[in-house]
Length: 155
Image 1 (tube, rainbow, N blue to C red):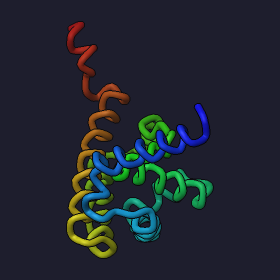
Image 2 (cartoon, rainbow, N blue to C red):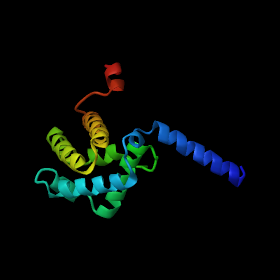
Image 3 (cartoon, helix red, strand yellow):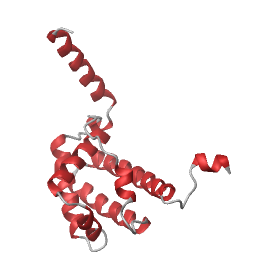
Image 4 (spheres, rainbow, N blue to C red):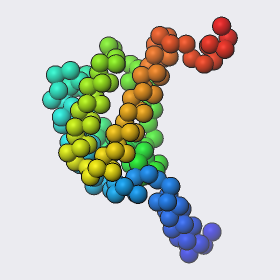
């Protein structure tokens, strides 16, 4: 593929992504994501309930924050930058339960509403709620507390 053809293909792909990624329509930007992620984790680290979990689990905060910016960029802008596997990482955390997810969501909602305009805030909150539910179900299956669909089909 010639350089000109590659550039046309890249621009077309970017235009398609902007049409279907939910964040563009509500004004989400990379700087907004960075501000939100950094503000949220500053708040979460200081929280009496979830702060100790984060502090025990995260060794390199700069690396972790960059990874979370990639995550939220992928979720809202469909950039595809996030390449992690968050379920196993969270499953290794002892004692992580619904109370922690509820507090995480409470702190997330507060921070999002402070940092983002209303339409962007609604998107970030809806996605976080969906992710929290998914994580809770996934952790239950991972820990053997809830049978997976495959296990249930065998029973």
